[in-house]
Length: 592
Image (cartoon, rainbow, N blue to C red; front, side, top):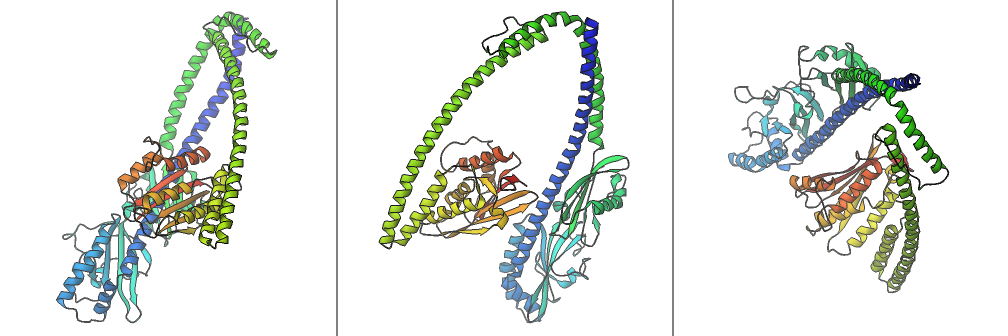
């Protein structure tokens, strides 16, 4: 009997165990692949974010130079060969050139910003103003077009003995023109490519990265096949991307090259006109997984043999405890929840008896909790009814005050009562924890209308929200605390007219809502401290300025959508503070 029982248990256990083992390692393999895909996508998205910031920085720098009237006047005078005195050169250099140099030096991502004047008879004012002859030494000078990017060239306007020039540069080239004199100069805003594409210029045997510009030229670190074998598969990689790529959309897919599974990713960079290519080999991770599988398989077989031997010896003892447990379970089925297993042994069946007792105790606790929960629900209904009665009283009072104000032609007070009534209806009516962006914005507008009554200055609200975003479902009161925080900590101390900008962007199944104030901003240390408070790494308590309002918004978002979503903070002292709320796109309650 013991031998037969042991064999039956062994067969029944071995087949599911084998299936589970195979499924487990298949899932683990898929997890490794998905994790690598996620890592590749995250790295590309980070690179894209850096590219966007760099492009925006270069465009802003270029625009600053284009808007400099003194620089334009000097270039016109040089173009038309008008005489310029030594004192004028000195004053221009000490005032305008130094100001532009300070602007460039304040942006650590910039390599250089240079202006090449159409004149060869003036003293160059380094590091900003140069003669056109300098520009003609650069490889793109003969064929550039204004407003285009030039990639992967060496800075050779000075000999190497004079300056250790950058090897991999990219720059935004813009012509400065005048209606009367035509092109009067050229602006070169340059950055180092290794700062924008760090992975492209890193060397790794298990990965390959490159950037392909609009003309089809491939830019990478120039490593040999000895350093990275995937260099030799560059054309094959690009060919697979052309077959897989969807227009204007990034993607990652698994392929096989040289007998290895690899993850190939590509991301269009419309700001630069090209796309980013990345390849990561899965072979190192999969080899580790295969070794773990073999070790675990051997251990499982040995453990199975040992358990079979123990089962053969303990069957009789197990059966005795089993029937006692079975009798208790039958009594529970008949409705007796007070019964317990009195004697639980120390073997597996004894542990089962202990767990049955724990389960019965837990069932009793749950029944008591359900009764308490029902009582609380009834109490909540009563309190909600009381709140509704109080709310109706407040609304009626506000309507009476509004009518009195309109009778006395105090329309400003009447409008304030209307805004206050809408604000109270919004805050006191919680039929659902979610509202649309449009409803939250309407509430914010009423809130600002009342806030502006307090101050001698005006806080404006600028909206840039696509129509589709207005229907987005968000947790109620998730944007207003950010607006309130911007007023109290960013604008109120300035005591002057200000604007709060609200911008919504929809991309890749997510919606990002940026709230930017033109207030006093924050230092990087203050931003870091605030982010730690929002993330809950620093304990906060009630009081002004401690970030508890933003932390509450962060907690509600992550409890609703998961930890991949929430609030991100950007700020610049004496300039602005921007908080970005990112949540999954959901229209009509359905996540897209």
